Length: 406
Ligand code: HEM
Image 1 (cartoon, rainbow, N blue to C red):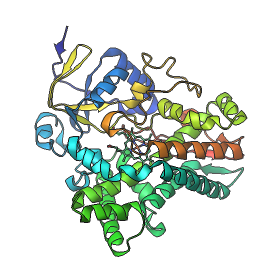
Image 2 (cartoon, protein in one colour):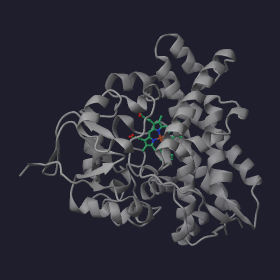
Image 3 (tube, protein in one colour):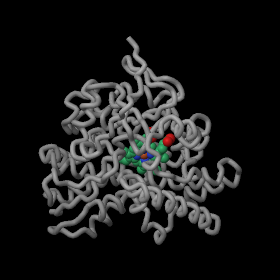
Image 4 (cartoon, rainbow, N blue to C red):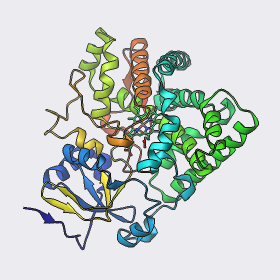
């Protein structure tokens, strides 16, 4: 029997503290109790979706939209429940294909689509190996070091900035601003970081015009000059690629943490280091950096296992919960590098699936293999339960990764 879910008069709050301290039991409890759970998040009513099949269904439904700027009037009249809670991000900074639907998404994604050609990926693998070795050479051995700060973030930052063409002396603030924009719990910090990244991309446009180079940002500027993308689309795409390109830092951090807390599995990988490449998808399934993807908006009713979510609602879709759904992955809460991870959703699903997944795999596998081959007796300096995760509900990221290399 189908029931149209009445919008509850009192909404649940996303259990923030539980999501930080025990994300998987918290998401599992929602997944087991209902296919769609209405919560208040950042001042808006949203429906949490956690089941594997449901997540795939909504992420591939063309009536479910990503462009919240285009629908902002309806969203603010329907879904806003606490006005003082919401972040104000400049509309012009949300015009990349990440925030678009249909033909506009296709047009803009198509303009950068060829950056990850097979030939380019071969070159990127060699670059990644060189940068990884250079960073490892500089790390102190036998004393505490934060691997996120000194290894994972500089690695991801250098690879993406080299690829798109950000000059070396302009890169300093990227990791800090990206971390604040994506994972800060403080609305003013999110707003300020988003504004500064937008301003930075405006400066980069001027720089590329003045000093064009054989790089992706110069190529995209030409697409703008040819009339194929607006200025807001260009600057938003710059920010998207820089922010997306930092994501391997989370996967490397989550991967190092997972391997250090699963020593038997790590010993197996070290006995046959070619297995490192294959374990990256299991890391991205097991500790999905995107706990939730950015909110979607329904333009038609959605039917999920007997429950109907009306049109005009926001969805909070959890990749982390779907990736640990026992209906899809047996013993989902164990880390198993031999698992068949086919169909995992850690890189998303549908038209917005990750554009840089292959580069993300290369960076994560290279970093883990090089680190553990060189320092096989590395250990955490804190008990795993005391690890500090970034606040913010959307991402699963460590704040620091204190280890002693050995
Ligand atoms: C292991 C590392 C990475 C993970 C786990 C990851 C994860 C994801 C996920 C889950 C999405 C879908 C978001 C959604 O549906 O709203 C996504 C989209 C995207 N990612 Fe990644 N990503 C990674 C690395 C990268 C890299 C290296 C780049 C390089 C620029 C990148 C660029 C993008 C872009 C441009 C999109 C937007 C695609 C679209 O909207 O059509 N990602 N990523």
